[in-house]
Amino acid sequence: MMAALTSELRWHRKDLLGIRELCADEITFVLDNADAFKQVGTRDVKKVPALRGKTVVNFFVEPSTRTRTSFELAAIRLSADVINISASTSSLTKGETLKDTAKILEANHADIIVLRHSSAGAAHFLGERLSASVINAGDGAHEHPTQALLDLYTIREKKGSIAGLHVVIVGDILFSRVARSNIFGLLKLGARVTLVGPTTLVPRAFEQLGVSISNDIDAVLPTADVVNLLRIQHERQGKEYFPGLGEYIRLFGLTKARAKLLKPECLIMHPGPINRGVEIDSELADGVQSVILDQVTNGLAVRMAVLYLCGGIGKR
Ligand code: CP
Image (cartoon, rainbow, N blue to C red; front, side, top):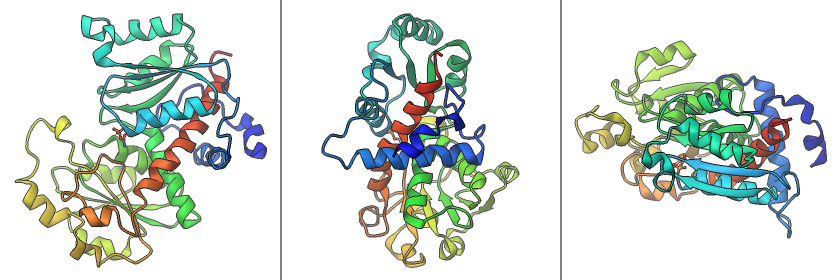
């Protein structure tokens, strides 16, 4: 464990705002640190003193189950003091600005602020203005860097490496911060990425990032090493992008019949929350190829690594 933790000089960022700005070495460094922290989770005493005396604020202005609980537990495992703030219980409801709320947190000596927000760029905005570390826990349809890191970690853990793999991401790409962060990370680590979904939700402009696009899922699945299924994000869409759910399931859903096209060793992933029976058949979500719960478990180790690395740089 110490080999990874003591080579801290390879990390120089106080904030984790996105995967786009990270290089492959930085991504790999976070994953290697997560390996060390995953091992901590197997001990009788699952806590380390790495962030003792530091204060972590989970500031979630948008709903979350996985990310919020994972960051909270990660901070506790690192021996930090943790407080949780949600939009409905904060003075944001009285008209206070995001910046003023964050300044209040910093005036209370918060060392790390984990922010989820519906506006793209919210984490960058705070990161530029605060001396505290800012971790992006998802900003609008922009980026969700720790989700991508835990997805990369899970693929690396199951497949040994990421370079050369064919990763297929299916669904609502246009409104997905998970898709964007995954695309950046997968390409940097040498994977081949194909996006699949309705034309309206997978615009050709994504090809400029270096991915392939297909509207024919049955043609793509047989060569996939990993299939990552995304939820239709009705809350961000504001209008209908396809005729109906029945049509979507028929054309893009991972049904039991369609799953027969997959290689037996192909991983099935989903960042959650899952809409069972829509983007994925319920039995497949719980089946032998699914690594969905491994993703959740690995999220804890990855977030411990991110808090540890950024927390070691912030406020110096
Ligand atoms: N994957 C993810 O971000 O889930 P939550 O919205 O529950 O945090």
